[in-house]
Image (cartoon, rainbow, N blue to C red; front, side, top):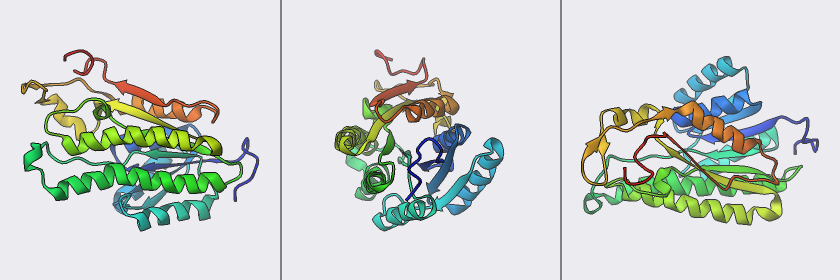
Length: 258
């Protein structure tokens, strides 16, 4: 196991879906803050490219580990790699997720439903389960888990039943993990993100469907601002926890009625 000197040991973070978009921004910020960062995702070429770039940009140490968060064996192998290489895990960021094009609920295929549940919810559960196993046994005991919940954990967009359902469920997983982690010094919180500028949100500038059926452009914010919020959450001592934080583009149509 890792050294018992928590003040001098390196801090180890795992960011799922860490090779692109918000995950990459979070990985960059955590590396700059002093973490050794393990980034996981399904495509090793994407991960290796991110590791090379992020190492150059921050001077921090990064490790790429390919994993499918919806597959229990793949997730166990990911955490076994972290345990064997570092002996500890201080921070898990459950960021991996997916969506499909907006589809009316009566037209949604069961395959699409199952794929979204596996990536967004089962994946977060499996990683949380393995993080608990590792954090409970390491010396010193404990660690932190941050879940990417999304604004969809509070309010849906039209025709997004599976994505919205999984993000609402993440809130339940966060609260349960925060409660169950107390005896083991494991803190768990959730960041709900609204309209961070990534490749996935480029359509915002062209217009997206609103609740009243109209199409409207929406403001976005820099992904680095979200990453800075994650670093803040991670910087707290384990005696303190941000259970829930909303970081959103100030003018996005969420607060009020649009």
